[in-house]
Amino acid sequence: MAKNEERVALVTGSGKGVGAGIVRVLCREGLRCVVHCNSNRTLAEKTLEEIRNAGGEAILLQADVSDPVQAASLVTQTVEQWGRLDLLVNNAAMQYNRFIDQYDVELLRKLWNINIGGYWRMIRAALPYLRRSPQPRIVNIASVHAKRPTCFDAGYAMTKGAIRMFTRELALELGKEGIPVNAIDLGGTRIEFKTGNPPFLSYRPAETRNPHMNGKVRLVMPEEVGELVMYLAGEAASAMTGSCIRLDGGQMLT
Image (tube, rainbow, N blue to C red; front, side, top):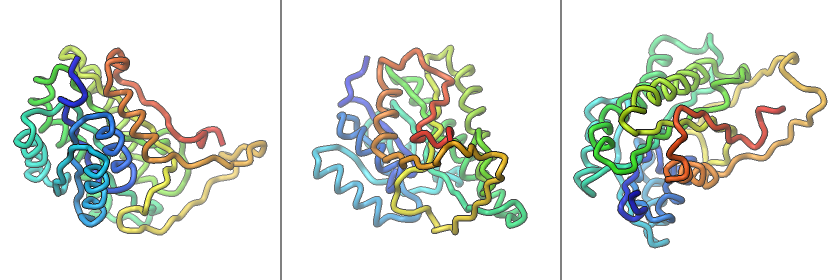
């Protein structure tokens, strides 16, 4: 088993929000982490500063995971910095909050190119190095919208459903190589803002509501996601693979 202080984690979309909570926890536990951003470098620099002030070891890398060259370079730069990669957390995603007739072909293609294409590119680029790790892990951030229709963004929900199946297929494919692959079905989480500040549009059909539930559930905190990732990255979870763990404050119950 590798010691935490020897392990290296790459968390996409970790300059802010959920990803920032994940890297803060991982660095607190001794892992060396990449703080990754695409567009908002200012918040990513703030996250990096917080980690270093707390005694953690991290670097900041900027890349667009929808671009094959940049995605591959993100992994290469990580390995050039520390000589290894042990944990890949796919988190970078877009959520446009559009009804289906508000999507055009180009916007839907962009959504898929980031939300599922980005995960695929990062895994492909990381696999040669994960295969060398004594304790490799892949964690994909999915969503409760992969399972429960909520009638606010069918395009986003489709990508998250794809991530769940992608996780299961990879768990079977990489199981013989000792690389566990799991997903977290994340509910509403308290973050600074959604990238692009999309408007929130929602219409939940009456037949999907439980009249006996008050619907009051708390938001998940980013660090709570980090704690779950830390568990999945540890030895105690070495037998877990192909799992999709729901972390949602009970939102799926309402």
